[in-house]
Image 1: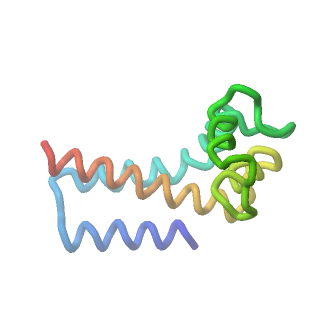
Image 2 (image 1 turned 30 degrees about the vertical axis):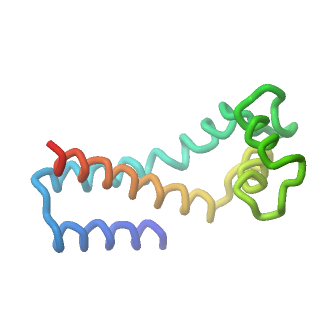
Image 3 (image 1 turned 90 degrees about the horizontal axis):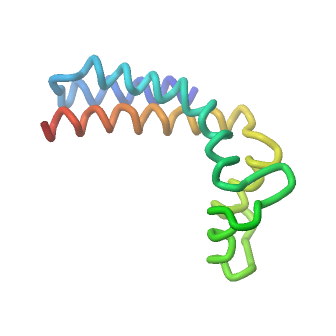
Length: 115
């Protein structure tokens, strides 16, 4: 469902404000939607979120330290740790895919508009 919404948004943005590289915009949007669910777990692991908790000395540890020792349930840090420990579920993959599609399309659109 999230993929359909993103595709509808991409089409609407092209109709309302077409750019020179519309084909590249759609292509990067689709590439982002496909790649993001595979890249997200790798990025979480590289940041220090793992099955055994947050790795000492990692970017995730610095982020946790910025919370002052109290991490609220449902915060971005707790969601990232949960995804790092248990993996990303189907809803999470759909959300990450939609975000990847948006980033890919917006990147190409800004590149076309800014030369």
